Image (cartoon, rainbow, N blue to C red):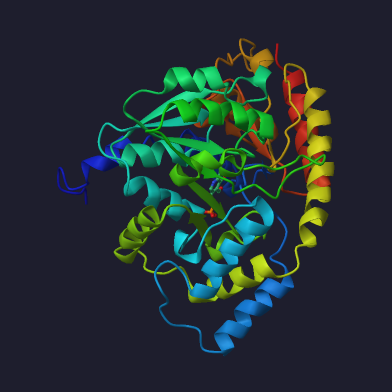
Length: 404
Ligand SMILES: Cc1ncc(COP(=O)(O)O)c(C=O)c1O
């Protein structure tokens, strides 16, 4: 039975139906038909959560830590987060400047919801993680996309940021290393961004450092409040357990910033999900305070996969795949395939059509760049085995060679 007219909130109209859904649904349909489909869309490490972290969760259950906790997280976890920021980023945060949520995504959602008023602008460098503009839209804010061009390593130029800032700009969202491009900002590049922000005291920075630990080739990681301490009072530094600690299903993320902002986030969370899972929090303490030695081991594996995928994709006709500094994604250009025709005579006009073709012709599911605000590109997650990646990229090469 259809819902009564006007039953659904108008705010839902402000979320774009995700272009990724079409491809994902198609992959599902093809699999259901028995087709051999390789999915390269996953946004999570294929490694299991380390045993010491699992054991900490089991011990918490056995100790009976199965009740509600403080909304912003238990004191031990907030302290572990503060210690992490000091140890890894040289940032001084007190535990009352830390909030913990059900995934970094909830913390991001909370932070934007408690600060963005209708008409406020939020600068979102493109290519961006799809949730940024949609959450801003839900808050009735205006996402302002600033392209980080491929010839600048998909990173936003300071002058382009400066040109995009208006009196209404409330936030800049930075994400380094980036989903979807894998691009990471060097200290010098962050310096350039910081200099622009110093000219605009009304603009706050939400830095999403979720992929901080997934970096290659000795890339030196910096976060913006560390590069420019004057920005510290207007920075929210966001991070989480999902990627570095292989804990996507545990739903645990955190942020640190000015106490009043942290309190506002807690107030909103107290009326939605309350605390993140008590068991995940116990695991999170072990993740942050326990051994970190598996991180370089995982990165060494990711790096061989990155190099494999970049090599195979650059050998495909019409594709160009830059080497990303971090995360587990590549973001190749398919500009050389646009304007060509499939063996069936269908014209490829967009990256979405290119990705549809890859799925239909050779059974490889990727995500079109249009979803991330920079076309014509597509995103491949290489968080899967070398065998699967080799097979997938070989199929992509064949599909590209068949275009005319
Ligand atoms: C850039 C970025 N930020 C934040 C998140 C959210 O991660 P979680 O909610 O699992 O902590 C993701 C997940 O894909 C991401 O890619």
